[in-house]
Length: 554
Image (cartoon, rainbow, N blue to C red; front, side, top):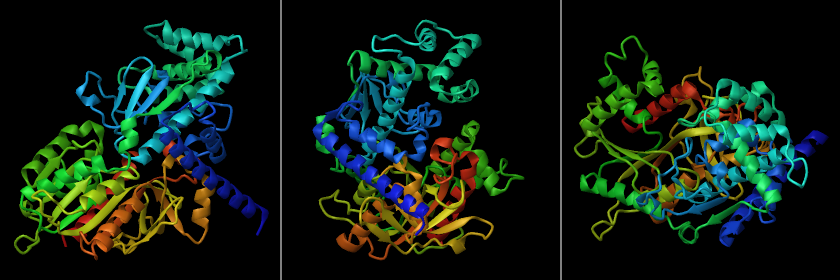
């Protein structure tokens, strides 16, 4: 074994140990009820992140500020969080009935409430994965804030560099910033961030939020201000967990409420005995595949099927999407927007109302249940509750679950964005839990000109904690891991429990798993923080959707 192999293994072991410490620490802090992220109680989290150096957080261990990582994190946290000293993680505790307006982050569907100038409440309805996600993001944010503080604070007497004073002037005292004012402020800001004027100018507009085009300057200022106050005024930032959240976590309250509503709808429509095909996917690909060409006859002329789907995915074509949805609702689709707090909407498709070119015996035409993406551990909660029998009339009624299909985005370890992964098993990171299964979707189902990979998928505890050393180990070792995602093992655990142990669904229920690549964390510049898929994801999304539909409607 050569020196580089030993080094790689050592780094992978160090990183694996760091992830384990992060989760143990988080559980301890959650049970304690509060902690100061930049104090002694948050030290273990900070040190573990420095050891881990997650790919998503880029240059976290360097002196210069990590701009792409900051953008990734800020898109997943509520607007204004950088101004708040107190972050309170709560359960669904009735704030939706108050005067507080929910703040929903652009890239994470979660309700947050600005209680006052100093406090932000974040509602947790998706279980531990969501808590881990938020705490790692906040830890990164505060580490970056102290980097800013170290660059602008001259001494312990509170003397600050001129660049900082000019940024403060722009943020606090100038109501309207002209182009000239903005560029002056950016020049000073770039100086202490250790970045070029060109770098900060390029990323500047990406931080804008609704009417707030100068949000970047505010984020840098308030992050630095918070760290300065921690050092000079001893006003430490505090993260708390509400007693109700600590009591409810792990009790499937939201998942049970969500599943009961769906099963009641199926029961009330006399669909309990129909072959039910559950699909975890987005809210557009199944609907568009079934209806788009029927309703958009003029728009599809001269276009291939994928060109039509690509057009539907563009933000400026909302009227076309509304047209398809209106038609779908009139021809067999039932839409159940979430009311449970899970943030998982559902569509039911009655194929009896569709002339599919297939003849089914009476009562045996497929019923499709499409559920929006779950988040991490929430996948187990929702699928576990959904597969339980319905007890609405004080007697157990079992659904006729014929198949379960999971489609989604995942990180790939071979190939690049838009490629397809067909797993043979899910390995649950950090545990001894492995879930082999017989996947009804095969590589051979796709044309040879596509990049399709088969092997094991690793279900990670959080995408924000992955680093190259661990992923390289999984990829190069006999585990033969092709990609990583957050839900697969959780779904399969619920499916195996329902089919093999509880007997609430058929023991031989068909399962399908297929993913398309959103990023390659082993390639520099290709992580999730490097940006979204754009239209690259359209073709693999619809290819997988069509394979799923072909098998369901065969």
